[in-house]
Image (cartoon, rainbow, N blue to C red):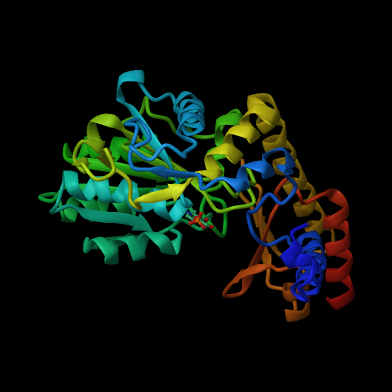
Length: 373
Ligand SMILES: Cc1ncc(COP(=O)(O)O)c(C=O)c1O
């Protein structure tokens, strides 16, 4: 402990904050954050000003960086999402929102007059990005399960057939965990002879679940998608917000600018990027690997089914999509919402069954529901 802390009353404040965070962590069910991970082996690297600057594939003149780890992380994701070797590119972002911004920005630079299509169940970041980039939007109906309504999408694309299309597809919606079907959307574009399009996949949470579950609809770069964004602090649980943005290399050329001051190319949204988060992602990949991630994904889905069965038993209205760890249910009392940090939308709340949500915590939550019903 530093001399400053020994002599300072701030220590008490930090200690009580620590206790409070332990308590809050043990009662968090509503948000898709895996709080169960441990990264002590990496704490020594907080002594360095790790900053990754510019394009990770083009070394910059600032050398206190973790780009060698960033490249390994990107390799892992490029393989997971079947990116063709010669057309593979990505970078570690500050989170899902930045990855979405990057993907849609690339689409806008490719097709400046395109319209951006997305469903009503889409995360709020997408309409904000449209505002930031000054792109006209087309809001598409959702099906009851939260998936995009393909009939409405086709009707709206036909109405604007003369304009290019940027599509945001949800690979796991925020509230209902619904997955838009890439193949069905590509078929619509083909049927209507739309050649100028860019498909961005928002795979914030499910990007680390879908590759591991059999029978779920396919999402990868063997399909004509342009970009895909995943959050790192959600399923992987890096403790700090971060994300993975994947984009076809040939498309990144549309935004690339060489900058002499940093000695690299500007191809990212932010300038200086967090150099610690790539280390955390790398460490998680080494420690858990494909096998570990796969087991965790199956456990989350199985515990989500456990929660759904418990809700069914007490006749509490609920909904659970296939291949999803997000259980939607009728909004409970404010007391329960606060205690378990539930996310709510209108009359509904959800629990996102992450690695840190155990059968025991589900049982405790159900007991609380019964008491207040
Ligand atoms: C579907 C979806 N997209 C994007 C995001 C935004 O991700 P982040 O909070 O990492 O910016 C979220 C966050 O919950 C999400 O659920």
